[in-house]
Image (cartoon, rainbow, N blue to C red; front, side, top):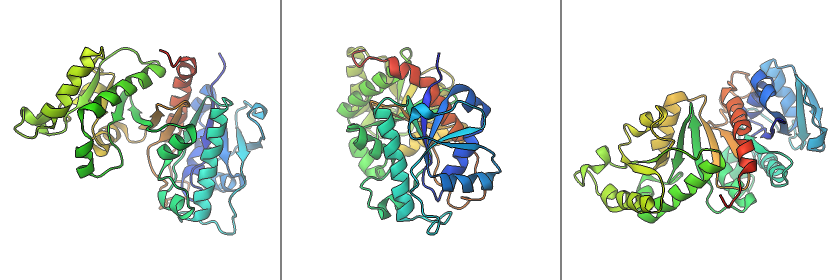
Length: 337
């Protein structure tokens, strides 16, 4: 069976993206399980190799078909969109925001055209995107817009624990307004389909509780009684294997131990803290519900150490390996399933 072909974006040029990408390209496990096509800027990658002491042969290509599957070779689609005269490590800039967007846009074109099996992304900077006039706040919104997906699903995976998010980048007050029965029903249905597309068809999805002890029947809050429990009843009647609400202080541990195939976290930090505490470096984000598969590191641009070579590449390598793991099932999945 052929190796999956993964497009790997360089991320914001001023951040650690180029450094973790070149380190990941030299990882024996990555070389064994995937053919990687880096989308970035050759000049910045050269600086990154100097900073990290990485010795790779950069093979610039115009098409995916020109890629070489050889140890020590970095296949690169060079967008040549960074002016080193204006470049500085660790500084947000419009130039780097535009460049980072260009890498993402090209990778999505490759995936939409089925030239690659999946996309793995290095971190970008929201301030730089804003300075460049890019009308999106992050990767998920860009991928949603460029794939025609209204509301992409975010899933974290680390050490086999999978976490979905009912809400993401909203305030706590706004989040409470979004924890509604119909939204929970919709998300469980879509998350279940997303899991099937990744080849996960067995097991129970757990819905995390919102209040302490899931509200204790209204003693500590009524959202569980009014919204989540009715959603669970409706979902079970529809045939979904779902449990909840399960107290958030135990549900993630239970999922990591294998009791559940995934958890629907109700808000951003609830799931982020659980996943990153379990294994910060190996937490990988997967954007589901789109016609293409995208995985990502779950950390930022780390401007404070950019250009020093100190950044670890474990998460970047894990993101590529997870894309390679899931892409065969993703390709084979029929939307009718």
